[in-house]
Amino acid sequence: MSRGPEEVNRLTESTYRNVMEQFNPGLRNLINLGKNYEKAVNAMILAGKAYYDGVAKIGEIAAGSPVSTELGHVLIEISSIHKKLNESLDENFRKFHKEIIHELEKKTELDVKYMNATLKRYQAEHRNKLDSLEKSQAELKKIRRKSQGGRNALKYEHKEIEYVETITSRQNEIQKFIADGCREALLEEKRRFCFLVDKHCSFANRIHQYHLQSAELINSKLPKWQETCGDATKVPEKVMNMIEEIKTPISTPMSGTPLPSPMIERSSMVGRDYDTLSKYSPKIPSAPSARASTSPLIDMFNNPATVAQNSERKNNSTGSSDDPSLQRSVSVATGLNRVKKQKVKTIFPHTAGANQTLLSFAQGDVITLLVSEEKDGWLYGEHEGTRVRGWFPSSYTKLLEENEKETVSVPGPRMMQMGLQSRLFSGMLLSSTRALPLAQPRRTGLAASQFPDQGLNPGPRQ
Image (cartoon, rainbow, N blue to C red; front, top):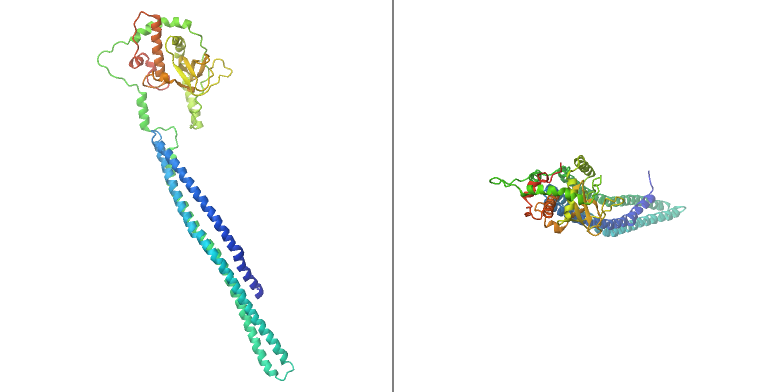
């Protein structure tokens, strides 16, 4: 599409004005936005560094655990890799500031002056050329008027030819000037857009390399990380061996023939008083049919599927057969009034609701045990404050500190039960046979030999 000189001249001037009035102000706005972008990324990098420092600290805690050592090392490695990637990102944005923001700031200020001067120079030169052309055209008109009807027509004809050639030459010169000026204006505009694109292509390439580095680092580590946390129930072999050693009863060989335990004789004497005691024991209601609810915090970090499996496994192991020792504990519980009774302290509140056989209490209350052995997670006792008796979940309580000092060195509910029964038998024997001197039963080997079914093995009851 052909355009006249005037139209091309208008295009040239509008191109210069677009650069000055739209492109350069747009660059100033871009510089401000780029600085905000830098601040946001720097804040993200600092927050990420603080976050992954926290991840590393938790990893150090996990590394000190016998079952979570490998998980702790993984957390530390995750923290290290992400901090390395954050440092790489920080370096890329330093170059972003140096190569884009700083360059744009410097060039924008200079470009405003340069483009303004270039446009003025073009307009002045174009005006001068037009004035020369108009002058030549005016002179040509004068000569043509003089040559009409004059005596020296030949002389004026020669001058007319000279002015026509001059006018033609100046018209061609103006057209060439306008064309060259338009080309230069369009190239000036393109150079500025090209500079901006080139700088952002360079930055995009750096970000591309950053993402490739990130993908390479994470892809090389991710399968191993996922493998370590794939099974939360898996226990290291060393820990399993340690647990198995703890579960296995330790038998101490003794030289010579072992002496008969005094507990055997005492058991026969207690048996005679057992029925007498049971006659005067208060009636204890049967334990609730459902298993006692566990502590609200016990399954906080378990997966729902794991919790369901564990619950089903516990129900199958405990629900298939009743524990015959419960009836024994109910009768023997009356003897607790004659010896020092075991007490527990509540760590969670419990509400009985409409069930009158259950015991309500608040956190921090003290309960005296009347039945020392659990029944499907339930214990029977008397509230110290209200003197109300009832069943309550054992997981909502802990052994009172004054009782912990009196228990044996091996912790566990079964050892507590053994200590209770040992003191219970001593109390009943003392009350029924005052004349018989009985020695205080020892809390270690004698109790273990008297109750082989309640040994120190903390495994599930059969």
